[in-house]
Image (cartoon, rainbow, N blue to C red):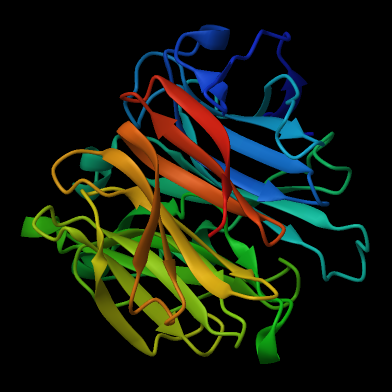
Length: 373
């Protein structure tokens, strides 16, 4: 393996379970000052893969940042020791975005993709044209024990070297964060889709230089195509889910701090183009990432959305549901009343969700099972 994909176990520690919430990553553990940006996927039933960024010096986005993973084979009751999966030396590796491909005939037991970004400068400096972001994926076919050499997607999806016009130059670039997905229904079944965002050209007021878009592959990762931008100024971090009719729905963070609602985007072409966008009036939020999934059950099929509901601070992590294609949402439960920020969710059958989220001013990343209504 090349340097940068380690997959090394780091000594077993004692990990507490507090009020049904299991602490998977805590500030100060393993020599990391801070853990952030959770992501989670399920391989076989009950077999969970939880990822987070380990930030060596502080909680800042840029610096010596690694990607770590913990696994569970019993639905989140017990977890393995943390392992470093990506180490970019003293620079940044982040925005872990896992996707499980279960439809590739070459890998009948499945293949786990992990997308991630690297950077040479802070987000601010990169927006100013002083740094570059790149993107890669690595894969595992043995349930996370070993990982492939990384594949660079920067030219095919970021296009940072293709534009002769500085005003169109793609500068910052980030996957998701949180899980991507494989489409399983409709004419695009088998497609891998990863949400992304980038900034275009010189910084603009209200972060209008940011745009959400996506990348997709119809040949199990061999080649990739970018989708168009949403063409919504300040659209930023996103996560996707597929409904029972095969449509793709994005929930999108608005970087403009004056917009306290989530942006939704609909695609009937599997993420290759965008049919409509709207602000979800029911989904109150500060400027923060949030998570989404779709659960098809025997009595109820719905989108589920998790994110902080307070519009002033990152707090009050809340579960909403929508049986109306993401246009109307109802509040189902407050998962955590205190400070809470980024999250990811995974369906554990049709009766529970697994929620992985940051809490208490980024001091911990915890896992909790939440009953579906």
